[in-house]
Length: 288
Ligand SMILES: NC(=O)C1=CN([C@@H]2O[C@H](COP(=O)(O)OP(=O)(O)OC[C@H]3O[C@@H](n4cnc5c(N)ncnc54)[C@H](O)[C@@H]3O)[C@@H](O)[C@H]2O)C=CC1
Ligand SMILES: Nc1nc(O)c(N)c(N[C@@H]2O[C@H](COP(=O)(O)O)[C@@H](O)[C@H]2O)n1
Image 1: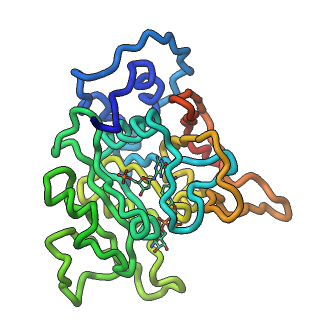
Image 2: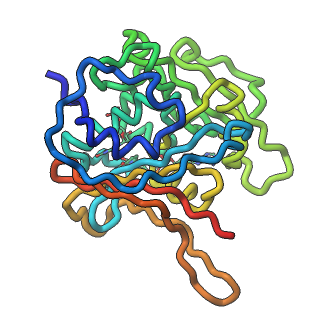
């Protein structure tokens, strides 16, 4: 039996205002659960404004699972399960509604994730594109789970984002992935860092209209400080503490003048319980 089950109508209604605008097009209608629970709906947050479609980037959802002490894994590189069955199903529902799932190579190497959508009714056509930010080609895609699933027709072929112009070696992994090279220019003090607007622009140019960014800590913490690049934030909070030494989500400190201020804040928030976990949805508050 699949570990992922269809969400109840009330859960779907809760998530809907935070999903990319194409919501509805991929909904498998046949296997939603009935829901007798009369969920109190939060006021629907306003959708991203119309000008979004003219933007140079996809709709961006940040999503991850956290412990009560703000940790996402027990120690660096240790795959840690935080989501329970309900929030796991929710994550797969979110995957169903995005064109791509993006993670960093710091997650891809230790987690060897599947990065496909196992929601009931998902087809190859509706699978999200797995995208791994791997500036210096550290990820060995051949033999990885994501490549195996693509070969079996249970997921799409992953895209690897690298720094450079694509010249040079054609490796042995070529059939298992597609590589997208992003030129960061020579005049940079951090030649392996790709500016996020460039990453998102590259995705958009390759036909991605919505991307679900799942981690890890470096990527989520960085993007929380770039609210104008983020449309929705969906956080699973598991009722557990991972303890010191874990990997935490911690955006860089923000100092204005000599004063410390909050680094990132959500607005238009809504909470709902999925099994033992709580789910927080919100929109990044852009400073005015
Ligand atoms: N609980 C959860 O929801 C999740 C937990 N995790 C955990 O997070 C941990 C991994 O976190 P991190 O080590 O921070 O890895 P990460 O997945 O954030 O990857 C960081 C790496 O990605 C590349 N990268 C990121 N931004 C880049 C940019 N702008 N330009 C170029 N390259 C860039 C760099 O090589 C960087 O070292 C793992 O333990 C994993 O299990 C990961 C995802 C979700
Ligand atoms: N939502 C969520 N809850 C957890 O407890 C997690 N550990 C993660 N991790 C992320 O999901 C990826 C694994 O995906 P597959 O199940 O292998 O498809 C992992 O790489 C993290 O990005 N997420």
